[in-house]
Each structure stands twice: as C-alpha cells, then as structure tokens.
Length: 564
Image 1 (cartoon, one colour):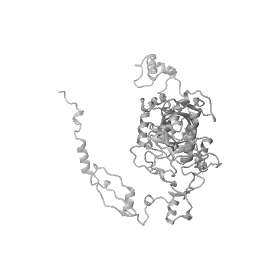
Image 2 (tube, helix red, strand yellow):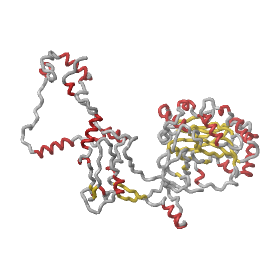
Image 3 (tube, rainbow, N blue to C red):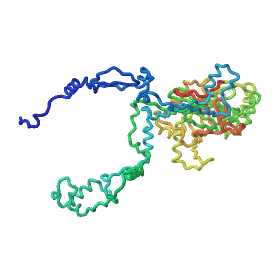
Image 4 (cartoon, rainbow, N blue to C red):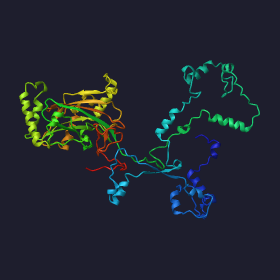
C-alpha cells in the first residue's frame, strides 16, 4: 500500500450526522432560536426549536381566528387587518336572450315562490377583489398565456452561437488553429494565441465623452432611459410557469353565470320525396349516443308534405301555429364523440294491416312506372284518403334510418381540400352525397378512415354539407325500442353490416348540416320563446332542440325552463 500523503492526514473523518448533533446540542437553547411573537402587545411563550426538526409555516388565517386582534395599535397592525378598499361590489344587469321572459308575473305568485323566481331575474352582484392578484393563489402566467407572450420576444443570438458564411463554431475554431503560426509564443490562456490574430485585429473605438465631467444625476437619468428603450413589455414571460398539477394554492376568478350551450349544429330539412306519393308522411330527428346508450336530444318534428297531402288531414288538424312549421333545428352537443348518430324516424296515418303490407307499395312501385300502374296507385290513394278521414289524428311507425354524424363532419372537412364544386348561395362550398345502399353509411370510404376512439370532435369549423339520404329501413314490429336501436347503430359501423342485406324503402331526404351561427335570426328556444333579433313573427322559425347531456354538466341553473 502506498504511503498516505501529508495533506490526507489532516482530513476530518466526522460524518454529517455527528456535525448536526453537535450543533444542535451547542445552540439548541440559544436565544437566537427563540421566537417571540409580539402582536398587539401580547407576548407568546418561549419555544425551543431544534435545528434538525422541520418547522411548518404559520397558517395566517387560522392564527387570526384563534388570536383576536388587540385593541392597542402596534407597528404590525396593518398586516393583520384586511385593507378596507379590497372588496368592491358591482351590480350588473342580467341579460335576457329572449324577447319575453320565461318567468311568470310576480303578482300571481305566492310570496315564497316569488322569492325563488327572483333568483332568475335579479341583477348579478359581482364581488371584485382589488388585491386578489397579489395572493399566492393567483397565477396569471399560465402555460397558454406564457406561450402567447413569448411570441413577441426577439430571439437572442449570441456571438458564440453564430458563425460567418454558415460555418459552425467548431469549424471556425479549427480554421483559426490552422492559420496560427505559433501557439507556444504566447502565454497559455491569453487572447493573443495567434500572431495572425494580433496582426489583423483592429483597435476598439474610443468611448465618446468618457473623460468629461458629468453630474451623477445626469448619468443616472441617461442610464435609466437606455434601460427603458426597446424593453419588451412582457419581459418576465421568460420565467417558466409553475406546475399546474402541484399548486400551492389556487384561487380562480369565476365567470359570470350564463346559460350553458355545447357545440351547436344546424340541421335544415329541405325535401322528402318517395317513389309514389299517396299519403302524408311525417318525420322527426333526434341525436343518440351509442357508447353511452342514451338519447341526447329531444325530438324535432318537421313536415315536408305538399299542400295536396296536407289537405287530406284538414278535417282533423287545426290551423298550425307558426312554431310547428319549422324545418331547421339547432342541436347542442356538450360531449361530441365518434358514437353520435342522427336518427330519422318516419310515421304515417294509422291504418289496418301489418306494417309490412303498408310498406310493400313503397318498395315495389317505381316513379318511372307510374303510367303503367296508374289504376293501382289510384286505388291506394283512395284507401289512404279513407284512412285519413277516419283515423287522421293517429299515427303509426313507418320507417327509420340513421346518419353517422362525425362521418359527415369529417367528410365535409375533407371536401374543403378536394372539392372543385362552385360556390353556392353565400359563397360556401357544399359537398353532396347520394348513396344507393344504407343511408347511415354515407361516405363509407371516409368512415373507414375515421378512428373508433373518443377523439376530440370539433363541430364548429367544418364546411356546410348537403346530404341526400336515399334508403330507409322498414319498421319491424309495433315499435322500435331503444335497446334494438342501439344494437342497429352499433352494427352500422361494422364493415359487414346485417342491415345492408335488408330490403330498403327508397326515398330521397335532403338535409343541410352546418355549424350553427352565433346569433341566428328567427330562432325559438325549446320553450318556444322568441330569441332576440326576431324581426318578423310571420317568418318560418328555427327551433333550438333541448339537449339531454350524456354526462352531467356542472353549471349554475341560471334559466327558468317551463314544463309542458
């Protein structure tokens, strides 16, 4: 073993734990470690705190509750009292989006009910805290804001990072070494490592007014102006934002409560036409979520019958209100997913016989053979008129179909890149589909490209599209239960769908699907109240369809909804 060096003999072998123990025993009772809390004239008991023991910070709120403020004034009294100008109460008028309030008149109510109703009509009392931003729970530098602020910051490029003519820093250093004539002629570490550099170096420019006598105040003012010049207003945005998962305290400022809306979709029903026209047909739309196995909207009923077909029901149907003539609807979807379907159901006037017998004429007769089968069609029309006169008030299920909503949205978005069609109407490009197979698998090729997982689905930025639904499924049995419907909808997404082998009822239903505008005109709420910007009450309205969210939505109840 080699002999130990001289300096190694003087190294202390005391471990860190022994050092802490010695310091704790020597200074454990020192007055420097005794904390006297003198607030309002009161003195707390002396406490010895070992250096090796971790001390939790004082909970200020808890201490203020357990230790009332003394009457006597002291130097730290301002720290205990909250500033008197911290809280500001502002009353903001409550906005009503409809022309007429849904709340009934207060004169007709019980006093207790009147107090409950006022919670929907009184102005908002907003409490603003002036010094809220100074607290530890307020952090304005979130990750999104930090990225936004850093957009305006110039990129810092230092001399060591840039090299002339696109050469790297290492290449430049190698080139200097090659051009050096003698490195050993200069001291190690000197800048003048190369005689070539010394011969080609230029002197620095002289500083102007360096030796002039200038007052200190003028120098400070000049330096302050230089610091402020070209200073970015978001200089501290370079500081990284704290971790969102482990905040010390989080006190967010709540927004003013408002009515909840999901992503809104506008559906316009343009026309409904069968191969034969012998009786009125009624249609309805609704949204279904296959994964959640829930109906996520109420029904939207629309009538696309001709005036001649409507005349067959005139003895049983009173004059229709303007609200029942709507052919466009706005659906709200809070949780859009790849499992949302738009289900279309058709009904007809109740008649005798099995549903198969009622649907058989629509499946065998073609429009091109109308002249050849004129007598049969006239007979069917006479039978339909008799049923309308006797049972015009009653309906029976006739047929149904479904549309994969997210498939239509994704296909419409791809048309923006691939479509070469001209502009329609207001300049929006619209794509159209015409499937001769199952209408629910419109655009099968694009459906195969879509993923089956719950990805983020955006219903606010796709291009408007006009869809032509060509096939309907005959209603089997008395009614289509929800459980059977969910099975059919899940089967539609499979490549080998059983429904494709069924014999369809040929028809043409044209609907227009687009993102809903922010402030649509002639719009009615689910309670049939007119939304503001309703210039003419005689115009055919657009209905807002009530949403049944697939999962709970935790928002304040700010609207009063009428029950019918």
